[in-house]
Length: 245
Image (cartoon, rainbow, N blue to C red):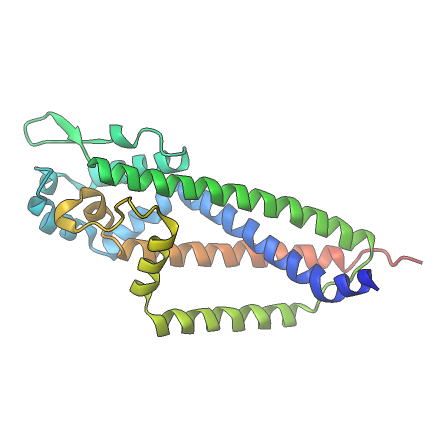
């Protein structure tokens, strides 16, 4: 009785969700290797013009408006590497001043914020790896029990409806409100997370929050590609599981 309930109502939702989490973690890891497509977002979001406009207006850090594209790519790459490494080295990221000397890119509040982000990324990896373990267990269980997966059309339909509902909800609430709500609940109350362009070279470099929307779209797209491609192979393999006598 219990096994029948599990097979009918829990097995495939758990397997699909854990599979999606694994695919999203892999997508994140792959995108981190190319600095989350910053080189693509740079011209698409006109980040250079943004830096040229707001860099000279910074109240704490001089000379950033005179830095060039390659410098911006290097700085964002170092931030990515630090976040992927638990926040190590964030305070040591520097940019050159017109006179040739170097100065830290970020103030203490910005470093603390990115350290908070790095902790969330570490948690994301832990959850993704746990989901990977659950996924493998469920796949082996389904194969050994000869549990036939649901039809691909049904899976695609449920996925499409879920994405459309999520997009509609995001549009209804407003992306900016959702962005602020996530930050309010994800970070400690006494840690600053909102920075004006005039106060933060980190925010200026990223043209936040525009860049986060760009990265989010890339992450979702790559996750769906990985999830769909690996899912098609998995469904084919599970459909060939020998029927238990």
